Length: 120
Image (tube, rainbow, N blue to C red; front, side, top):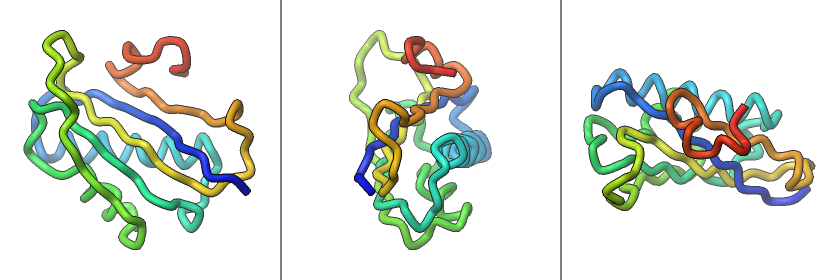
C-alpha cells in the first residue's frame, strides 16, 4: 500500500448550511466510491472553503458520514479576486494500492471548471 492524496471540489449555489453539508457529503462519498477507499484506510482529510462560505464547517458533513475517527481539518482558501465563488475543496490522504496514475480526483457541479482536464 502507498499513501496517496486525492483531490476534490464542488460548488454550492449559496452559503447555506444545508447546501454546504449536502455538497460536502456528496463530494466525500464520490471520492471514496470512485477510488474504492475503505473508510478504515483514510489517514486524514483537509477541507477548504472559499471566503464566501461561512455557514458551516465542511468537516461536520464527514463526521455525519461516520468519519468521526478520521483527522479532519477546515481552512479558508485564499481570496484570489478572479476565483470561482462558493467552492468547497478537499484533499484526502489515503492508504491505497492504486498507482498515482489511477487515482480519480473528483470535481462536481460548477467546480468541474477548475480542472476540466481531469473532471469526469
